[in-house]
Length: 168
Picture 1: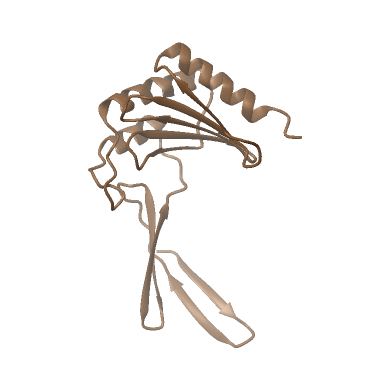
Picture 2: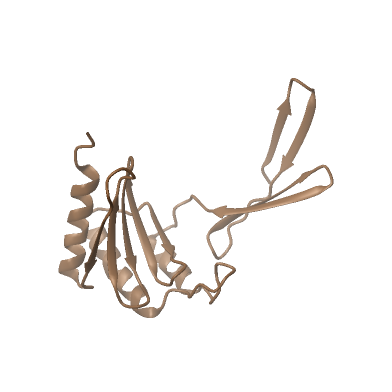
């Protein structure tokens, strides 16, 4: 159990925060701590990468309806299967996403980053495949793709070009 200790030297007061982190099925870390008589709890997305992205897909396939504590649909078999083929194309081109997460509207989202630039690929339960390119400054670009290997290769090439373009 990691224990975090904060000291306030000006007042000599001391706060002890003891947190027990555990990974759960939703890939979140949970921390509980005591402050006076109040118990606090937070849950944040886990930062560690899965053993393999295929293992991550398997984990996501096990999500139940309402996995986000609201009404989110879990990823269905079609986006899961398409994402598995996309992962094979990524591996073939020696590329790796920064994250692979379920979306609250159903489906799966891959995020790729380089500095302020982000490429987000979403396989939706509706059957659509979208790519968003964004740098937080210029207007974002959204493009719809077919779900096939030539399209996946085009997406990977577009991601690489966008993320590695001159940032000036």
